[in-house]
Image 1 (cartoon, rainbow, N blue to C red):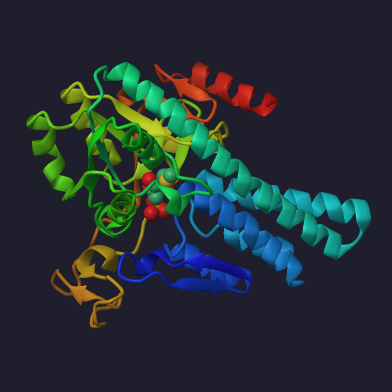
Image 2 (cartoon, protein in one colour):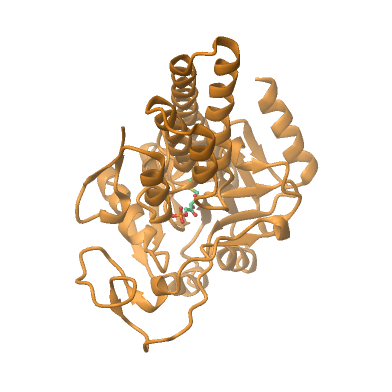
Length: 348
Ligand code: MRU
């Protein structure tokens, strides 16, 4: 079985979610009980191993897991890695148990590598922050959640802020609440509070006035998919922050493992952006709220209101100051520099 921390219940409760088959994991992924690009990859790989260990149809499980959410490329990459290991072992040995063991080993390797990537991203990210902002005392704005909840290690963008905090160089982490599902308020604030760093929560639409007041030195965000041209898909609301950052001459830094760069997606327009149910916008759906609306929450709009609810948006490369990976930073962000980075990573 696969045991996950149910992120829909945070911060009120730390509850484990037990998945005994791939359909349960698919549901956990769709409901965002497990979420965030690197973790989706790790969970997807473990899902394949779970199906194999339990003697289910592994091809069917892999297909369902891969299709559970479309935007984060890490999910399909994780699933495919475990699937490939399973198939190779099956061809070699003809033994389903050996194939299941190989899928599990692949999932564990991905899990370990993500932790290591996270450590290296934090170091590269902090070095870049220090270079861009000499003098320390960084006031960093982040969006969505990119800490240890989404990673085998300490995460991506959040790991950089944490490294700065540990070195005494983080003055404040500004945490966007991240409508509609509040990953910032519920998860990033939860993680920040546990580290003891200075942090302040703001509504997404308060970010503009914060920039205007000169209170933001840098924006640090993660990514769900980075196209070959450097376009960055991340939680909806990231693109407006990039526009604000450019207007206010503030660095906009994306932190993501190389596995988030997808050479098969040529540009931003080719990234499939997940559209989610309208009730996430028309209702307050926190799990602790009593059920009255269609989505199980309290309606905050008239019944029948249509909602536009993309889960992600795409920031063009020209608005991204740098992309920080475990292999180092790319700045300026160009297709050539990204391709070179991916090639270097494959050689390691
Ligand atoms: O819909 P979510 O919560 O899975 O979206 C997550 C994000 O957008 C994160 O910023 C992204 O996955 C990067 S996490 C390192």
